[in-house]
Length: 217
Image 1 (cartoon, rainbow, N blue to C red):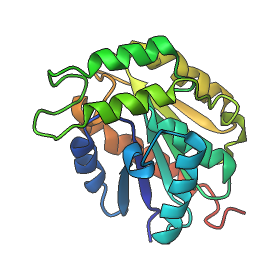
Image 2 (image 1 turned 180 degrees about the vertical axis):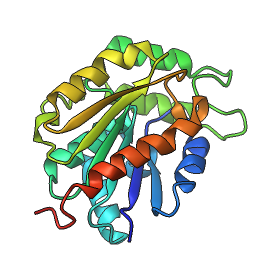
Image 3 (image 1 turned 30 degrees about the vertical axis):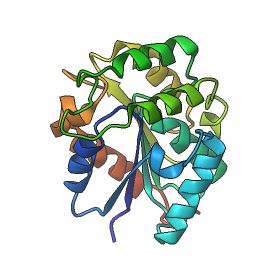
Image 4 (image 1 turned 90 degrees about the vertical axis):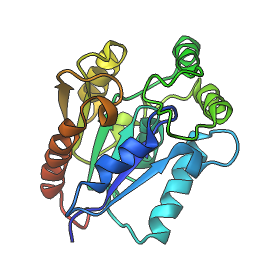
């Protein structure tokens, strides 16, 4: 069976749009998860990584292709570093390596009553919940996790997402086995801005997964 794609979606992005593009990844089975599904209270990256491991165990997903999106990269990287034998390959999209108060403040500004920044007016969005997750993420740091991720990786962001160009390049340089990509005419949320580009990235990371031994050894 093709590798299971597990997509961790950061808060404030369009979960519906991401589920649409992930569901179109047939024939590879896929699962999309939001951070709020992993944690009931305050966001703790270690606790979220443990919750992800339990969810994968319950679903009998042994070696997924792990996709982290924005703040979802915090949990994806922590899980991949703590369980290096689990991911077949890793895709980090617009990674947030070390959320700062300034970055969190800007994210809060995006979460206003108008549907911007990937939030869809057709979705029911718990803005207070998202704001709390963003606040909890301040101070989290995965920079020391990246060198411990042994799975082949692709690190990418949108050409118009200038704030994430440097973190994306840094992550690609630190990961032991990574490719670096910039997607043209795309902002922060590829599922909304350039959904047609996401399958290409998935094909790229699946190709890298095919190079990884299926049993981790």
